[in-house]
Image (tube, rainbow, N blue to C red; front, side, top):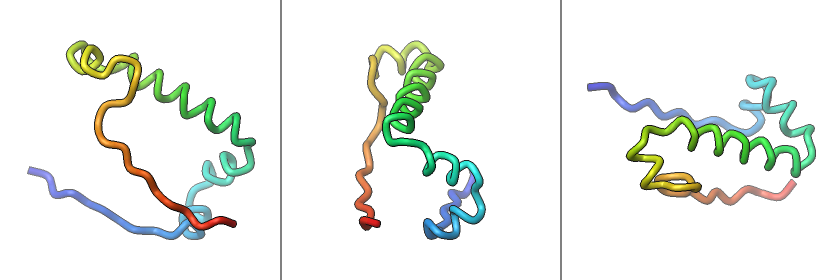
Length: 71
């Protein structure tokens, strides 16, 4: 059995370590949302048959809402 690994980081640390984050933060909100939608559709398309039938056109599993400080 594998142990679960969880790590905590700040937005500043993540920004320093992740060049893709800088790119996506530079893009307009509409483009970022469109990419999330494209990834969601790709995820749904690649699900196995039983899971796809159960989920339909939405994501399976719980949704976590995160409150962020305003900049």
